[in-house]
Amino acid sequence: MTRHALAERIAPPATPRPWWARLRRLLTIVFLIGVAALLVALARRVDWDEVWTALAAYPASTLAGAAGLAAVSHLVYSSFDLLGRAWTGHRLPLRQVLAVTSVSYAFNLSFGTLVGGLGFRWRLYSRLGLGPGDIGRILALSMATNWLGYLLVAGSVFAAGVIAPPPGWDFSAGAARVIGGVMALAALAYVVICAKARRREWVLRGRVISLPPARLAALQIALSSLNWMLMGGMLWVLLQGRVDYVLVLATLLAGALAGVLAHVPAGLGVLEAVFVTLLVPPLSRGEVLAALLAYRGIYYLAPLLIASGVYLFLEMQAHRAQATRD
Image 1: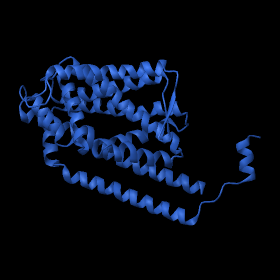
Image 2: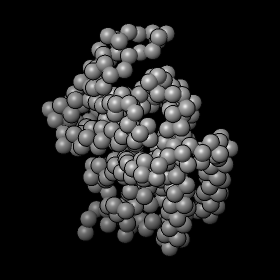
Image 3: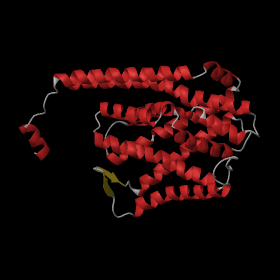
Image 4: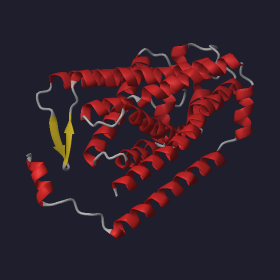
């Protein structure tokens, strides 16, 4: 008999206190009301007539191609947590992991990392039985994965001088190339450190920070780089190939960074400003804004509607499982 099993026999698990069960139900209701309020707030910010007009102006083949790339991108991002599953060794089914990550990503795109990337992931994983330690490691690995790929892809295109800083920016084209080179090297250095470091764990403010294996680190960068390139490919399709793919990708990466620095959910207005600044000319302002409206409709809004239904389904599943355990 193991020590853990012996401890369970000596001290059987305590039954949940009634006040905690009531508080948990109350917090669940508050959380669901908050989700509904977020969705209503987003719906009010969207000019739906403008979105539908932009989408209606596109050939069906263009929209189908963009939707296909969007679906693959969301699937690739959802696979980030499969890396977390392999690293932590938890045994949640693959379909549950993909469902949790896809829901979180859809809300993350529209409402920011704090709500989607952290709040929804923590909520759903804890409801499925994962402990705080495993959830924290999964969250850290996923966020690192996203930005490691960004460092490599953005660093490479910035170092290549694909885009020049617009007039009025505080640094030159040469400085942008140097910064890009440093970004790309930082991503590659991460893999080398994971492969060569003898010390694998550090304690920072009571939290253990550990390095993943080199193979996992390489997969992090590969999957994230692929995801960013798929997003760029989707916008290139919506711009109907009127500018080079690498230029569209570089503009998207610049817009993503600007959106993070501006702390604006979904980068509303920021992404549009960057695209208009860098792509007008050769494109017209109307062409750029129509492509971005279609992009938001396909990549942000449609997945969010689907994720809302999936989230409610996951909540009902978790509620039934909890009722069975109680």
